[in-house]
Length: 370
Image 1 (cartoon, rainbow, N blue to C red):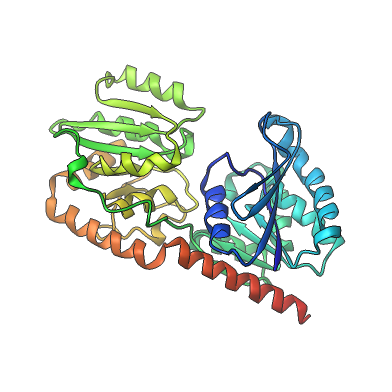
Image 2 (cartoon, rainbow, N blue to C red; image 1 turned 45 degrees about the vertical axis):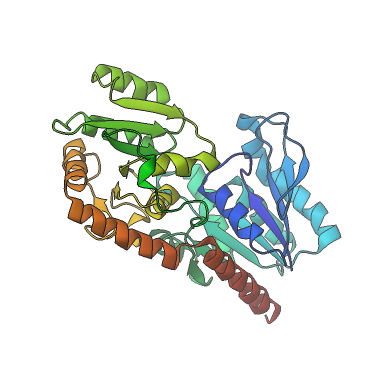
């Protein structure tokens, strides 16, 4: 089978969607994958092979220009590649510029099945222009995979004909292993978040919440980078938390398990969330989680069973939940045990890759019979 992937960004840029492509394609060696993506950064090669994927980068290496140009330039590149490779299927990752190129390709080659994967946390919150194109991309798909029940409901409203499959992002269980208590570096309670520093992830709420932790000896570790960093640093200074909050910066993906293993609790009070792979990774390492009941998070978080929910936009409630989980050893032990079981049963990349292969085969078979 030959498959052409479309993704607005790909390695070395790492997000949930990019990680999913890498993990799934590495586990499907019997399929030939080509991928069209925006270049976004100068110095990156126009072509390279990464794992099991031939990566074709489009654009001049400019973040501002490459994304909006990807729909048209990626479409033209896809037509050129199809002449040589005659793909069995095209697969768009997220309803963004990359999948817009797949949408245009589908008009020229309507018999080539089009699978679309939705990973977004807040599709309804985009601009009118973005929503205009997103709806057309979703409606054009022959099959849709989504990473959460929340996104399944969204897709069903726009596409009544395509089968919809819930296929979550997963966890590399060889990489994210149960933590060793010997890794603890001090007696302080370490609260960690691994997040892009953007408004949707609610790191400002977390910082305000830890200010209320009066009877806990703690440190908050913020791993990640983003456009909100300076604003968050100013907030820390304003609240007098310089000795309590550490900005770790962008941590290489391979080092994240080590930092998680040193922590006692993972928290991200998201304002929106597609699924939240970072939560699953923390669960796999064996630390409890606190999250908000938004987007795809309720798919894996059961309050009091696999984590605790906190209210959105409520630092006081979050502070209470942090105190509760760090002072109640029975609750903490129960949550860790249940979380590990859940991740191992349903969120292994091996299992997810096998699901995707079955979806590919079903979609190709179905379209060939039409």
